[in-house]
Image 1 (cartoon, helix red, strand yellow):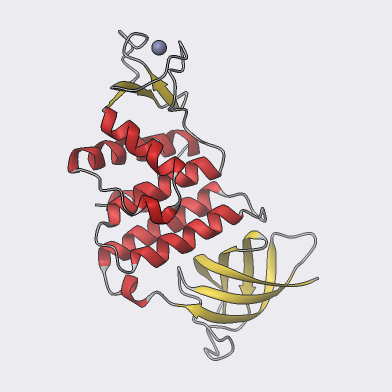
Image 2 (tube, helix red, strand yellow):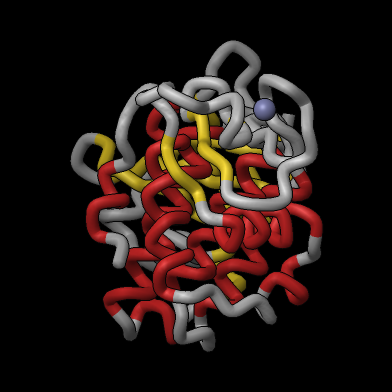
Length: 244
Ligand SMILES: [Zn+2]
């Protein structure tokens, strides 16, 4: 079957002497892997250099019994030049590509993740605070992919959380100070960090961009979100250590 869609390049690697494999996150079909035959021998064969975080229109032949398909056309739509000009921005983009590649199962459409990636890449071109964007992305990805941390009420007594609380990596939620006494596996989380996560979860992307995170909240979010993701994914993201 021949399929057409738009996709963001998550990762590429060389195949034999002349070809390349690219993993795309596509609008219509989710994560799709395909071979670009002969692309390294003839650079003009495709209308794109298929670099990471470019957006492309692709046409591919879908094999029924394989996760690896054959890309017949690939035309560049967005290159995000300002991101490539800046090391911190490139590292932030690399992190979200690795995260999506790790979290999303093959060939499962997810509109909200696709839109989120586009919003992130578009904002990253001009926004100065790259870490805040990464945190917004992490919180929203957790919500959209089903790992949503439980933050409104205490995991144990169900009381509403409105002040300082502690976070359980294992259970993915908050425990109030009364219930958390003596439990050394829980992480401290300030009311500011809790309300920032809730704000990002509940608001759309442009509204999230208006949120200014203080340095101490950033630090907490970085620690808790990175570790929560590692805990649930079962391994570390390689690009995480380069994040600011
Ligand atoms: Zn409680």
